[in-house]
Amino acid sequence: MITVTFVQPDDRRTLVNAPLGANLMEVAVANGIDGILADCGGNLVCGTCHVVVPARFQAVLPAQSEMERDMLECVPDPQPNTRLCCQITLEAAHDGLELHVPLTQR
Ligand code: FES
Image 1 (cartoon, protein in one colour):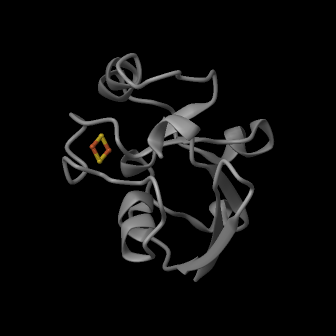
Image 2: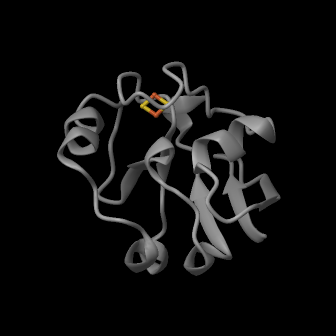
Image 3: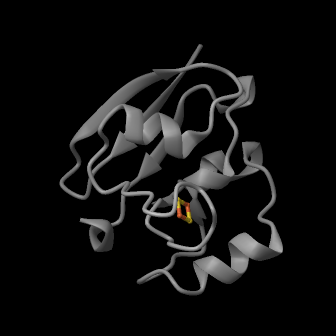
C-alpha cells in the first residue's frame, strides 16, 4: 500500500491508501474524491479525471502518451503539469504523491 493525497481548490485534503498496481482514477472514484468524475471509465475520451501534479512529483510519473497529450488539449485550463489520472498506474515510487483537483473540475 502507498498513500496519495488529493487536494481540492479550497485546500481540503483527502489522504487515501492505495494498493500498488491500482489505477489512480479508480482509486479516486472509489474514495469519492470530489471533481474526479471519470465519465469515460478511463478510455481517454472525457478528460474528467484531470489533475494537476506539483512539479516535485513530475519525475516519478510515467511519460504522457500521445493519446493523453491529445486529450489534455481538450480539458479546460490545462497546466504544464496537468495529467489524466486514469493514465497513471500506482507504483512504490508514487508513495506520498499529491494531486490537485482543478477548480474547473468542480
Ligand atoms: Fe476519461 Fe480519464 S476517465 S479521460
